[in-house]
Length: 400
Image 1 (tube, rainbow, N blue to C red):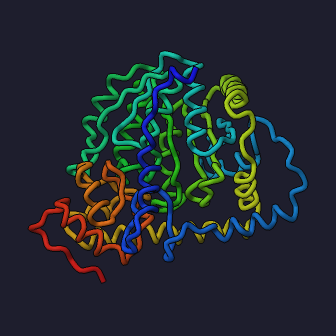
Image 2 (cartoon, rainbow, N blue to C red):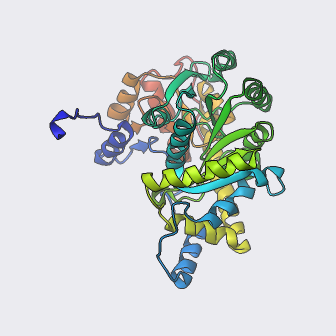
Image 3 (spheres, helix red, strand yellow):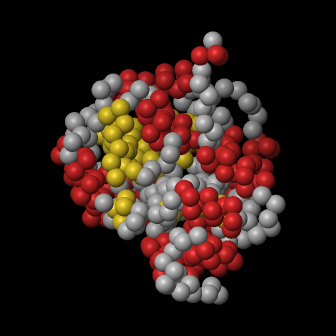
């Protein structure tokens, strides 16, 4: 059987991580893997998480199965944070716990394929590299279109509208709710309004990937585009991740939410989610969701978490400001949000940055802004200059 398989290429990001760890240079800089790092260069366990884990250690009295739906208290406690505490939408939303945001996307794709096998998934590029494979693996046709022109670091909105005008009623439109990965470039409020009107007019189904809430501007501001879209459409899906904003990367904590104005159809769709989850992973892992539940059930821990998240957000945006101020060609980075920005550079340049300069970033030119230190700014700018990634006629400004 195995002799019929073809060897698959190694994941490029995992290979990048391995190469970074193997590099003996003390001056090396990791802008590759998408995790937050603090002032000591570590990805810490948040204080609220530590306290929640101690609470669980003392009070949790069973490790029994929860069922394919997972921890529904966790799912429901997230609803007001995502959709708004006073939203009328709350009565039209059901959810299920998933193994991370990736699990939510895959489960949603499976549900789409079951409900409408002919649905096409429209995906703006560049995007998170796993988006297209997830939808494709669920046997859905993926239609991509240019979302951002990296040369200008601007959304190509005409191309977005042009592409979606070709979509059929019932097709899926994947949207990054905030902190676009990999570009850090989000729709403006006016563009979100136009996209929303287009979705309604064309009867297209938004599938919102909300993986970085609270790491752009704030929990509330980062949720506004999602709430705007959901207030207008009849049906939608939201894939949510707690991996980044709770720092629970390895725990794989996520949820998938369905929105429908038709209560009977929503109930049927919910039963199908449970059925699909059962044959995919049977039961989701409990520990991470239990941590989030313990935090959100406690007013004290919730405030600690929100304070920590504000600190993280401020640090990421501070890194952006420092890098943008260091060179005119990087000024656009200050206006972007989230963990990432994406330079318009070739694979040859990113390879040279790794080999010659010890600056590691994805072949696509994606940089993890949340992984750098302010002291890295000068090295990053000088390295980009050395490899021809910046306009050499523009003088770099020393970072202070």
